[in-house]
Amino acid sequence: MSTTTHKTHPMRNAWLSLLGIPVAVIIAFAVGSALMSSTGTPEGELLPRGSALVVFLVLLVLLVIPVFLAFRFGRAAAAQGEPKAMLPGWVGLAIAALAVLQNSAVFFA
Image (cartoon, rainbow, N blue to C red; front, side):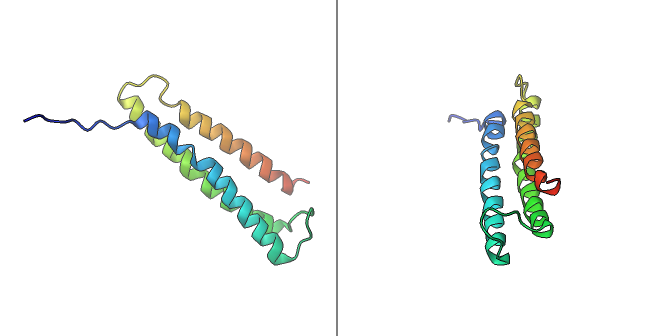
């Protein structure tokens, strides 16, 4: 009787978890568009600060999930001796930081 071993691929999972970042941005964009239409804000104008804060917090919460997963799977890959195992986590963190900086510009405009 042969025994098959089930090997996990945390490095692959770390990179795949970064696919959640564009999904988070699209969801935050949809929330922002819905808030613009519900508040009656004309096209091309900025949202009121309170509504913009809601969109910003939605984006922040949604971006934390894939970055957390990338770091979690990266640590698992590092435990298996994978070189550059934390790279997906750091890439995800950099992308999330840029998205947060870009979307926080409305508070300083």
